[in-house]
Amino acid sequence: MNELLKVDNLKKFFPITEGSLFQKKIVYLKAMDGVSFQLNQGEILALVGESGSGKSTTAYTIMGLYKPTEGKVFFKGADISVETTKRPLSLKKEIQIVFQDPGTSLNPQRTIRQILELPLRVHKIVPERNINEKVEELLKTVELPSDYMFKYPRMIGGGERQMVAIARVLATNPSLVILDEPTSALDVSIQAKIINMLLQLQRDFKLSYLFITHDLSLMRNVATKMAIMYLGKINEIAPAQEFFTNPLHPYTQMLLSSIPVISKEERNLRPKKIASIGEIPSPVDIPPGCGFHPRCPFKLELCLEKDPQPVEITPGHFVRCFLYKN
Image 1 (cartoon, rainbow, N blue to C red):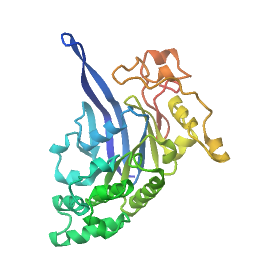
Image 2 (tube, one colour):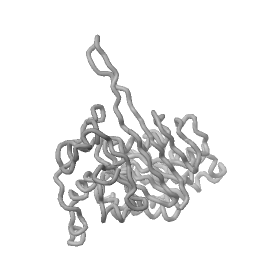
Image 3 (cartoon, rainbow, N blue to C red):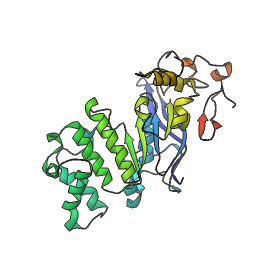
Image 4 (cartoon, rainbow, N blue to C red):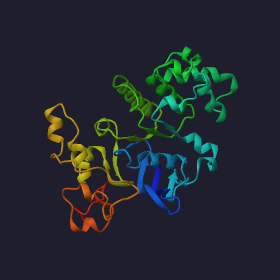
């Protein structure tokens, strides 16, 4: 498969001022601390983790909304590790993002037609005379009536607003779409429809997805590759089928063992129950050694002193843990 996106040792630290008025000091919030992965054409890579793990920061840095502190982002082999303002228009056309809350990502002062025609004009997708026809086509693609183009975002439901956001992304014919928890702000009744639509669009338009989520169970039948983040690092990455049948990192096992199941088959696949100990530490005050060791039931003495490096256990299955050869 052809490599589309490569993230190499990506870091993003945010400076924070602490202390009193007369005795201030700068500390750094390590939102991303050495993230590496690759996404091939046609794949759906799920980046999963608890709140504060660095998932969205990874997405925004890839998009160019944040400049990386260190590391590189490559797209189709070219280094794109710069802010979006410095990226060529052709690159912005190829990489698009669907944000979590469509209520804030769509301009409330513009009609749906104005929202959808903007990328068509900016990127010169179709001649001016065909704008209206293309807007109708985009609405049809996301299963919305053509007369919605005259409505404002406030006049339609949350699920429909997210469909408009997806249509806006499709307007530029992208290669890579970043989905930043696209269903978490929606009612449960509409989530399945949005997911099914995204999967159909991925097949129809040969898209590649970087799917940011905290919902592991959702990804079981969606992703082709899984990556688990914790405190700004990727603890495990593997093909989806192997990830769910042979999880290696204690954190992965902890997350999978806590997923509710409704069938005997799912229960047999679920790892042995591992108690979730404690809370995720602050990314401003990360413990020495392996950041997961305060919550790990299998920690070694070495875990308290040294940070493990990723090792490949089977082809494409990497884990960052001293329980495996390091």
